[in-house]
Amino acid sequence: MQQGPFEECLSQRLAPGEEIMSIAHDGGSRMIVGMRSGNIHCFDLEAGRIHRIVGVFSVKLPNVAPACVAIQEDGAGNIHVFGMHDGQK
Image 1 (cartoon, rainbow, N blue to C red):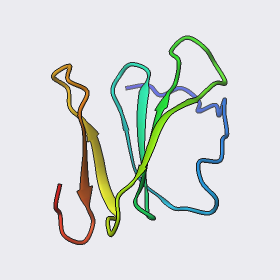
Image 2: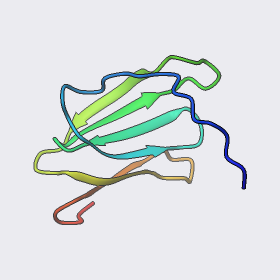
Image 3: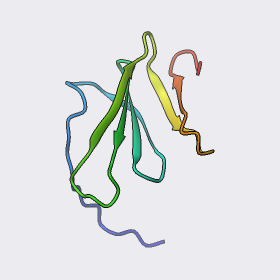
Image 4: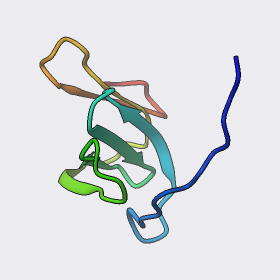
């Protein structure tokens, strides 16, 4: 498999000094980012438009460090967050 060069086309600060724990993409225009602080951010990448990320929503889950975030692939669009310390969903 041949890989092309990586080109960064956008840099955007998501939160002040927070560590990104997990990222999920739905294959379309939606991206979910889980931060160590428990903040979960949903972004619309606006497929076909370069250099633009739009925030859809953010939520803080108390006492959760999201080790994994996932987007349900059955069309419902549910977001699943799994905690690092307890594995709870």
